[in-house]
Image (cartoon, rainbow, N blue to C red; front, side, top):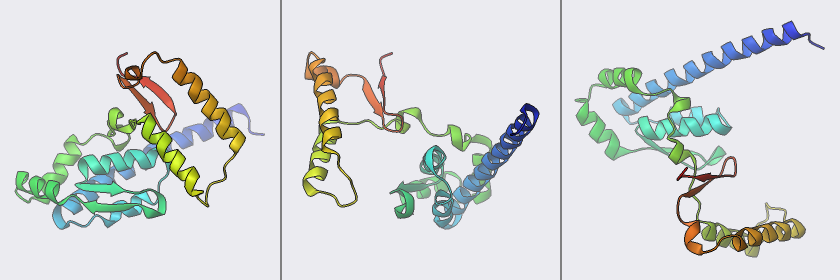
Length: 191
């Protein structure tokens, strides 16, 4: 077993490597963004996304969509990145087609990729009725890649019914609430 000093040393090493990795990803994102600006080629965004997972992947996707002149669709192996031609055209006009000026603009003004995602966009707004309809459709289709536990679904349905019974009117559900899909937290926007 490692002693406390050895563990602290390993933690310090992780901290340094994480900082260096974040910095490298930032450099990649800014330079690929300038490459998209200059050539319209976004293939290296897809390569970078294929190298990341979880929250880092989500944050990188957010940076690409906000600053990379591209749109990201799909997840995992099916991730597709396409150049947002209208935004690229407007941005090229704004910077007189000068890719070095655009690159410098990003270096000076783009936030760190791990801070770039707007919290409002990161928390996906869910329409509960559509979610329930979608689930019902998946159950009816009997999707082959899903193992269903009828008992667990009945328990969840009972919990949902209890939650619905606690609401005085349907209008209360529409005002000021989001469900954060990643953490399954309910966020009161009015607070």
